[in-house]
Image (tube, rainbow, N blue to C red):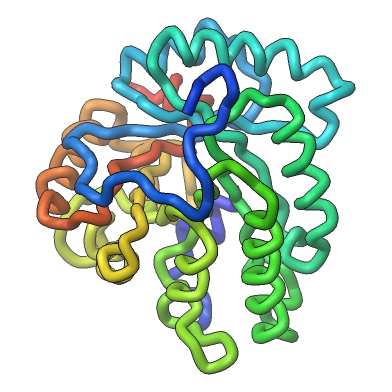
Length: 285
């Protein structure tokens, strides 16, 4: 995840656990608001599965987005991911395969190869895409083509894929058009859920987590797609109001409870994901 781009985006121009399959991109779970306190987290890196799941369970995390490398079948990471899956099952935690590069929007064959490697492991409940096309130079030189390429990627990722797909998105996609249609709406048509990079250190009020996410929450309610918000814990010197690195863990947890309260009337709300395990784990109290 490009946390700098996501955090400063206001400046950007306008089933069975053993089988790993819990649904499809063509079916949806009951569309009701997530229970208060629903949490997820990104897991970038090769951390010890026992420590990860113990931490996740202690923090009431119900879904982990676990990074899956390109070379999962040959680099030794499959053993670690199998251990992670087994421990996640025991703790009642869903496991989503996390992956993405900005150029997947222009080179979808790479994304499809990764997806097929993920499916071959038979370990995951969902696919979690972190593809940020706005990080490409082509977003400036050929914005229409880049947006269309990203939408085509989402379509191709769904074809023949039995797992639900969730995509990380900046909060400002709704300000953009593609082929005369709203870009955020077109993204929602092609995924099962989104996680909004609502990186702010306040729950409500101007420029807060809830405020910057309102557009996606409204669109999610209209299309009956789940919308997860997100909090940042990595230090961001260029955007200190985008992270809880300075405020610490207690302040973040209080703020996220306030987010739960402020969004209780939104049927689209799917809880909050925390970016990321490595920095959250060492966040000061």
